[in-house]
Each structure stands twice: as C-alpha cells, then as structure tokens.
Image 1 (cartoon, rainbow, N blue to C red):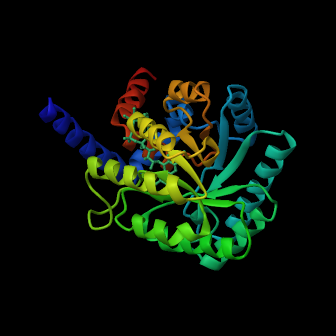
Image 2 (tube, protein in one colour):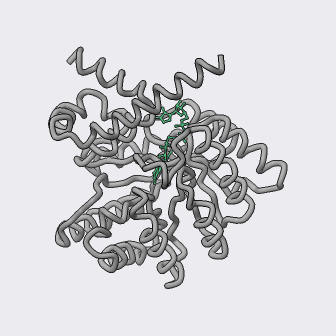
Length: 312
Ligand SMILES: Cc1cc2nc3c(=O)[nH]c(=O)nc-3n(C[C@H](O)[C@H](O)[C@H](O)COP(=O)(O)OP(=O)(O)OC[C@H]3O[C@@H](n4cnc5c(N)ncnc54)[C@H](O)[C@@H]3O)c2cc1C
C-alpha cells in the first residue's frame, strides 16, 4: 500500500514538473490560450470581465462564503501597463464596496511593476491601500520573496494595517521569514507553494512540504495576528481545528481559504460547521499561467482538460 502511494506520489511529482515546464512552450500557450476557456479554464476562473466576477462573488456570498478576487496578470514590464492595472484594481475595490460584497482583493506585485522597479510597485500598492479596503499581496516565485516581504514590512511601518501577505511552506527560508514577521502581528495566508522551484530553495518532496506546513501553521495560529489557512488538504484543515480548540484559539483569529472550483463541497461543509471560508476567485483575460498552475497541482485536472479537448 505504502509503495503504491509512493509510486503515485512520484508519478504526480513528475507530471507536475512536466506541466509547469510545458507552460512555457509557445505552442502549448497558443493552443491553450485559444481554446482554454471553452475547454475547462472556466472551472477555475470567474470569467474574463469584472461583470462576470461580480456575479460569481455574489453567488459565493449567497452560499455563506467570503471571497477575494484577483485581476489575473503578472510579470508586467511596462510602467504604463501598471497604471492600467492600478486603475482596474481601483474599479474592483470601489465596485466591491458599492455592491456591499463580502470580498477583498489579492494581487501580485509583479503585476504592479515589481520587475521594473520595486519603488514603482510600492507606490502602486500604497495608492490602492489608501482606499482603505484590505488587500493581500500574493507570493510569487522565490526570486520575488525578499522584495515582497520588504514591501509588506515597509507598508506596515508606514502605518497601513489593511494589508496582508502570504508565506509558502515549500521554501526552506519560510520559518525564518515567519519569525521576522511575527512582531508585526501580521495577517498571513499560509500556502504550500505553487511554482516550480529548485531543490536548493524548496522541498522537492510533498511529504516534507506538508510537514513544514503543519509546523508553520501551529506557529502562526499561536502568534500571528490572523491566519488564513489556504489549503484543500483535509488532514491539515482538521489539524487546524483540533489545534485551535486544544489551545483556546478563537475562530476570529483564523479562516480557511480555498480556490474557486476546487473542493466546493468541502468549502460549504466548513461554512455549515460555523467556520469562515474565503474562496479565491480570479478573473480576467490573462488566465493562462494561473490555469497551468492549477493543472500542475493536480494532474487529474489535466485529464479533465484533455478529455474536453478530445470532445471539442
Ligand atoms: C486561497 C489560496 C491562495 C493561494 N495563494 C498562493 C500564493 O499566493 N502563492 C503560491 O505560491 N500559491 C498559492 N496558492 C496555491 C498553493 O500554494 C497550492 O499550490 C494549492 O493550494 C494546492 O495545495 P493544497 O494545499 O491544496 O494541497 P495538496 O496536497 O496539493 O492538495 C490537497 C487536495 O486538494 C485537492 N486539490 C488541490 N489542488 C487542486 C487543484 N488545483 N484542483 C483540484 N483539486 C485540488 C486535491 O483533492 C488534493 O488531494 C494558493 C492556494 C489557495 C487555496
């Protein structure tokens, strides 16, 4: 049994690497971009427009779920393009407020210009935080972790409390990053990590990533300001609930977060059990890299996608 699980794990790890590497191929990109929405991307993405996203956010709210939304995009290299991204996020934040949705925004600093100039990304996110709503800064590839955490810290030191960020359990550096952040009573989302990282930076084996997640989770629940337990892993979800109850950590100090289109029944079950669940619900025409990361996380999704391709 253990050998079968190990073999399955190895096959999945190989497929994950293959899918994430194939994502860079021009031919794969062209094909998936042209046909992807019809073939299955809509399962993970709330549509291409803000209108599409708002109706999905409302539907999630009606089911007792919270949501965050992201205008998909990353790796912007033109300053003028970042202005357009900031304007689009302004509109999203104002729309969430005017529609009184239980939702906020999560964004990527490379979408706001981090690869052009860290100061530009800082000024861009600051202008969005000035609107007063909570904004979470996603965590991207390991090369951006240092600058992302530096930006988060600067924002907190500048007096912005309406900002949170993300730590990834697959990185060896994360326990140290967490200890550095704890004095700020941070609002942190904990994830396993979605990118293809080299073995000198991140644990290559899932069991180590999961074990690290458990350790970081316990530390965060005990000492962070607020913890967003972002996983679909039922063992870790149950561990969170057990640990919180044994250590007298109140429900308001943590929430669960899952991705739109992934384990929707589990999302609703947790709501029924009285827990806050937020569904990360991205939208926008630039859904390609996001879709490829979702396929990489669960190779079975690739078969779902390919089945639709053969049917189509
Ligand atoms: C709200 C949220 C925000 C995130 N933000 C970031 C971020 O900022 N940076 C970052 O690097 N990563 C981010 N991630 C992705 C994360 O790093 C993982 O890649 C992803 O959550 C899968 O890991 P898991 O914890 O669900 O556990 P896994 O062990 O991978 O999965 C547990 C179970 O969940 C189900 N499952 C998991 N993924 C999928 C999927 N794609 N499709 C269908 N079923 C699936 C399967 O049943 C699987 O057996 C985010 C994830 C969530 C939920």
